[in-house]
Structures are given as structure tokens and as C-alpha cells.
Image (cartoon, rainbow, N blue to C red; front, side, top):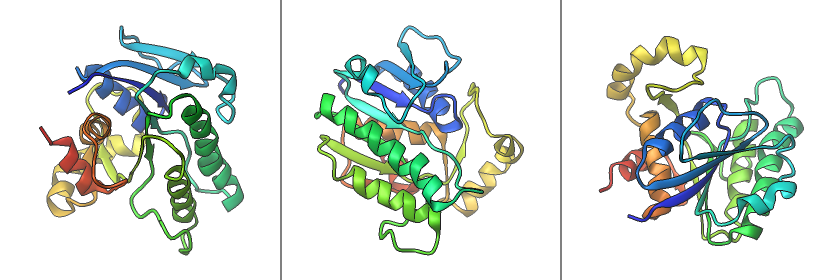
Length: 222
């Protein structure tokens, strides 16, 4: 399995922090550059950081993002309390602006986008966030990357050693074994999500949209 160099966003959030931790521990990941508005709080020989205040326009630092095999994109926020226009800006506009700069510099890159379970690929459903996520997935898949994968996790069990875990997750993590037994299609571990992303780059996958069962399957491929 080849070694890969990864660009990662959202390292100060729960999923980004968890995937970063797994990347740093994975022998197939040679280097990670975390780009964000502030430092991620980790130090490692594999890790480089680019502090950039405007994630809607990364063109000023684009030359530092050349020669990478993958981007793991986790930027975004909850739709709670936001209008569709506001949520579209922080989800669709942000991801597409970022991806368009990257593909111009790295056309052979694999772009991995964290979406969410129940995302609406038709873009016509009644749930606002699901429509916006669906449009984001669809438009990313139109870009001329080598490959684009959209990951749709549900409840994620955080990895030991994570710095950034939502408070609610800390209280309900003990329920994970029960949830995995009763609702296996709705839960996964952070390690499974991260390993699925890494293997989508090193080994590929037949689907561009990966539901929880796909992530578990890919994560456990030899």
C-alpha cells in the first residue's frame, strides 16, 4: 500500500481532530498538512500547519498545497438557527471554493467530503440541511479530481486521545455498544471513518457515496 500525503481541514472540530489523530498513527500516511484559522493543538513529526484566516479563499496559500494525494474536508457547522442561505454559504460555498483551488493545483488528488447520514441527493426534499448537503456532494463530484468520495456518518464513537469531543458525545459514549448492537447501520467508530477515508485514497472504492455500512466495510479491507 502506497504512502500518501494528506491535506486536512477542520482539525479543531470533533471529526477533523479524530481523523487527524488516526492519520498521524497510520503508517500509510506520510504527511498531513492541517489548514485552518487557528492551531489544531497537536504536535507530530508528520504534521505541518497552515494558519489562514479566510477559508473561503485559500488562493493566497495555494502554492503550499501542491503535491498532495488527498484532501479530507470537514469544515462546516450545524444548520440549527440558520437560514438556507446562511447554511448554504458555510457548507456548499465553503467546500466548493476550497475544492476548486485544490483541483487546479492537484488534479490527481482524491477529495473526501464529510457529509451526513440522510443527506438528500435529489436536492428536493423537505429537510433544508439535507438538500444543501446533497447539492454540495453533487457539485463536488462534478469537479475534475481523480476521485471524489462523500462520507455519510451517523453517530461516531470518538477515539481515545481526541482533544475535541462534543460534550453530548462524552455523556452518551457509554451507550455505544448497545447502539451498535441494536442500530448497527447508524453508528461507527472514529477509527472506522478515518481508516475508510485513508483506504479510499490508497485502494479506491466502487461507490462515490459511502454510507455507514460502506465505511465499515472499507475500513476493514486488508
